[in-house]
Image (cartoon, rainbow, N blue to C red):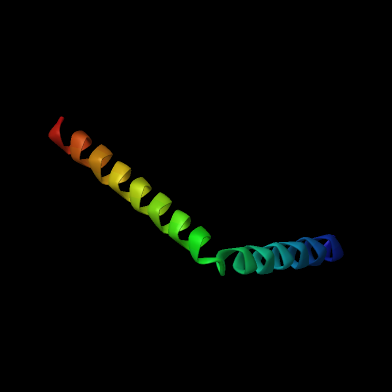
Length: 53
């Protein structure tokens, strides 16, 4: 049981490393940043419309 957990954790860390390597590309960083920005704008718009009602 613990071994499975450790293996899963190790796998997730490896994935994280790959993600970090992927994020080193400036174009990818730009895409991620703009995506997050759009998502934040979407969230604030939603919360604003919820506050109006």
